[in-house]
Length: 165
Image (tube, rainbow, N blue to C red; front, side, top):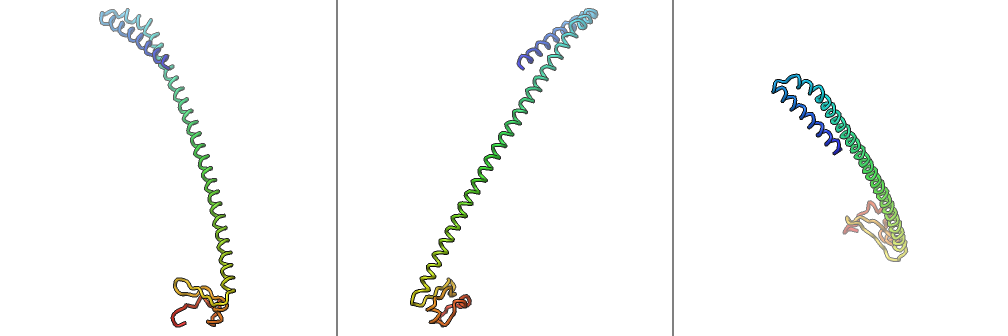
């Protein structure tokens, strides 16, 4: 491209010399010599200059198309990278969610089994056991407590323990 720019500048310089010489002939009132110079050298210099400009424009167009093509490839590569990373993050998120779900299920299962063991233990002791929630509502009665109070475990949801019981 530098060669074509230099070639265009040289053609422009040749065309300027012909123009300046023709102006000199016209200034000296030598119109025939000016006309001959323009026909003989001016047309050729003009054609060379125009041809070199076309070549320069064509090379710039090729360079632009190459740059656009490279930018398109870079954009496609970047989008593929972003999509790949997105898919990896999605899979990692799914794996983490799966692990958390399994751990929660395992904890719930462990908690259920522990509650079952506690209820079996409370059911089997000889003392009366009553458990309450924060508002004083009965949550659990073992058989001995049922016998002492006369309440049934099924009725415990509607039973509130207060000072009169």
